[in-house]
Structure formats: C-alpha cells, structure tokens
Length: 265
Image 1 (cartoon, rainbow, N blue to C red):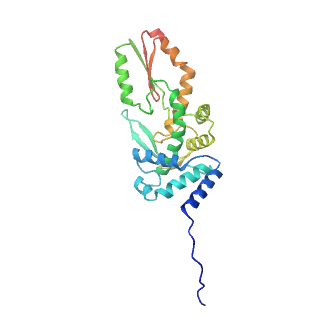
Image 2: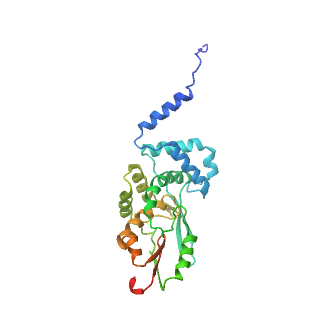
Image 3: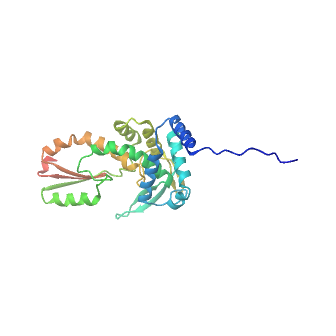
C-alpha cells in the first residue's frame, strides 16, 4: 500500500485563537477574566506557602503554569470548580493546646485569591478603623501599638476573646453575612463550597458542618463578613460608641475595650 499524500496542514493564526478564546469566554456563565486569575497567581507567588494534599509545590505548579492557570479559569468561569480537601496541620499554642491550620493546594489558593480580590474591596470600607485583623495595610503590631497607647489614657481595659471562633463559625450565618455584602453568584457559589470542603487529617477525610480552618486565603474575607455584621448588631454604630468616650481595638476575635469608667461598659 502506497502512502497517501495529503495537503499541507494549516495552523490557525494567533488572531483566530484569540477570537475563539473570547467567544468561549463569552459563553461561560460567570465573567471571570484570565487576567484576574493571573493576578491572583502573582499574589500567591509573593506569599509563597507550603504544598497542600497533592504535595505540589509552587515551583512544580509553575512548571506547567499556563496549563494550570487555564484550568483554574476554565473551571471557575464555568461553575465547575470544586475545591480539593484542605490539609490539616496542628500548630502548638503557648497554653499547651493546639490550633488547627488548614493548608490548601497551590491551585486552590489561586482560586481563593480570585474570590478575595472580588469581595475584599466591598467589605474593607465597612470595617471600623480600629479593626486590625487580616486587613490590607493593617497588622497585629499596629493593634499592639494602639493598645499600648490607650492603656495610658483609660482607667479600665476589658479583654474579650471569642472562644474557638474559627472552629465554631456557623456556615449558614456566614453565607447570610456574605450575601449581605455581595450578590455576585460565582462568589457566593465558591465561598459556600470552600466552607464545606473536607479536611484531610492523619485519620482520613473529615467532613465539616461548621467552622473554617485558619490558613486559607478566602477565610480572610469569609470571617470578616461575619464579624462586621455580628459586631454591628451588638455594638451599634461605631460613631455612636465613640461619642460615649469609648475606644475599642479588634484583631480578629480578640477585642480590647477601653473605658474611662467601669459603668460605661
């Protein structure tokens, strides 16, 4: 049998490929751009971090960067992204107890950062100036400096700690709080999936009906949405509180309230 001679194979031009990608993007149910995914990757790269349950390091992820970022974009924009389990690591605390730390995979951290970039600008302006936990331009060192300064100005300091806040975070109330700040469907979809993502412990997969492990990216906007709503309900408008001569400082679930007189508390 003689080989059949075929014509020259024509490769599609770069412009044709780009047009196909744009049409594919328009057909997706959620408008998430590739640029958003790339910017999210740059933030994850800057923060570094350990590998998750797949043992894929940042360097290994970058060895197939284009394919990995495309896969994240394709799944997120189509609504088919499901987060993998979170690697659970116990960190010892000074009091002898342990704190549960969750380590997502590198790819999942990129996906979480995409959502964080969308939601954080909406939530951030609603925080009180004296709230310091996991906010852009804020730090625990600033919270300590403020506390040190105010200890010399007020007679009483009330130290408040929400016990096991992250372990007991109510998923339904958290989603209610997030919906209060955004109606973006893909943001709500993925935050709910991350809340329910199982933990990979030494004993196997552990389903979660409440709580969220510290260590993930999106937890820094999940929990603030909850805290903003709950603290507002209980403390009222910050301007009204300050009008009574009260100064508060908050770092996540740790709160210091400063009072001139004890009865003002």
